[in-house]
Image: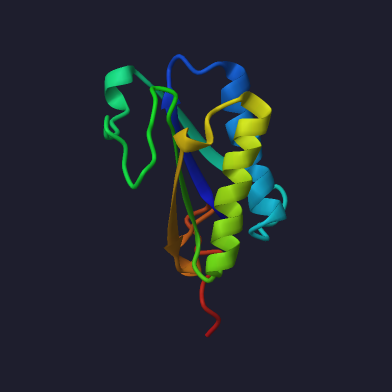
Amino acid sequence: MPLVRINLSKDASQEVVSAVSETVYEAMIGVANVPEDDKFQIISRHAQDELVYPANGYLGVSYTPGIVFIQVTWNAGRSIDVKKAFFKAVAEGIHAKAGVRKEDIWISLVDVVKENWSFGNGEMQYAPKE
């Protein structure tokens, strides 16, 4: 049920785009217990002036124009340990597969309740049982 939004530079190679997409999906299955085939992603490429980040860094992390923003909306309920492991798996995986700096892998998780999803047909597939 996750929806992943990936925002990166228009200059990113297809190798980088594929590595980000596949690594996030693999981490969702392997770390966050997401069912296989539950791969919904929106990948957007942007001009340099459309990816805004602090030039002086933030919280001791410095960024480059190669920054990759990843936002995952998924069901609430995962532990802090699972979320930490997910962050680590994504950053290390993308770095290993495509050479993107781990510092440039910026991730946000959005927890929602299950009934906030419709997977088509105008239905609430995870509606509460009455």
